[in-house]
Length: 144
Image 1 (tube, helix red, strand yellow):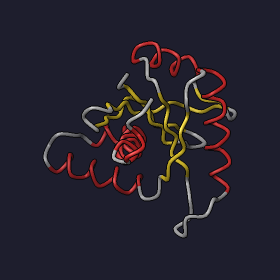
Image 2: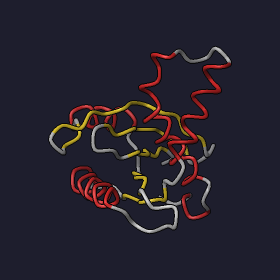
Image 3: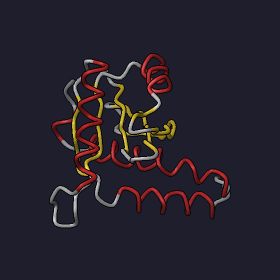
Image 4: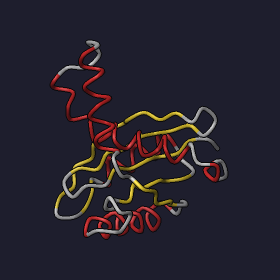
């Protein structure tokens, strides 16, 4: 299969993106609300049924020095829950600077007239796309 999901984990919102192994491209799908520590599983279930990804990639928040930080634990817990729920391979990957790149992409799209201010809620999904594109660009991401 070639479909992969990427996630930008956050304590209030989780960005979701879909990517293609053949093209190495990804695009944001949604920003999923997190309530009381749990993501909106029904929305994630619907997205999974629609796209049928074979691998799930979760961004791992690291410090600038590459060390884990308190948010890393939340991302790891989320990755474990994804694996338990969907029984799919889950990969963790460095997400440093993904939010900044997503914000830059959004600003460029706004400047080009492709996005409006109200579309700012999609930045979490765009950050997930950045994370996923980086993972897809790694040599070991081509397998199932």
